[in-house]
Length: 169
Image 1 (spheres, rainbow, N blue to C red):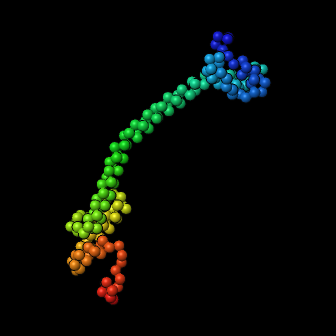
Image 2 (image 1 turned 135 degrees about the horizontal axis):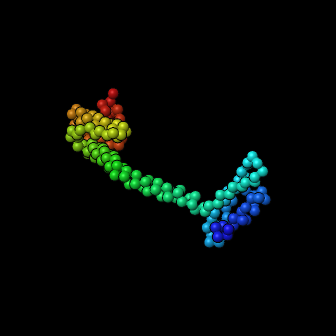
Image 3 (image 1 turned 30 degrees about the vertical axis):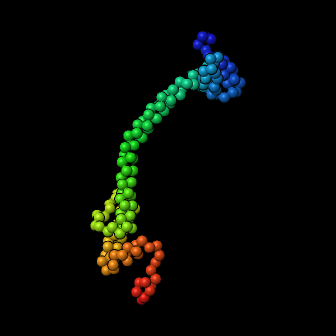
């Protein structure tokens, strides 16, 4: 029986019979870990049947480890597969924001040529594009009533006009 019995089984059985835990862990001489589970089987007669299941611990975890490796590979594949989409979305956002920055720079330098309104799938960028488009149109209309050098100075100025400068209302 010792040929098929890993060292430590007898100690686990003795410990269980003396009231120890029904699940126990032990290691053989090579360091391989085992799990043992013991259970009394109740019968109708006088039979005293005990069930013991003993297995190397690594056999319990082998399936989990192999599935974990497969899930990790699947997750990495998903991330790598989604990377081009993320890069594309990021470049699309960056392009919209660069266009808005360029348009506001043009307005600041008083280059008020007609440009189409910037549209975006993102509401906040779309709103900002609408605001820049409106600002360009308002400044262009304002400059048709007031000389361009004055409008240019107002656009570049960081201060507010006083009532005297506006016409003294």
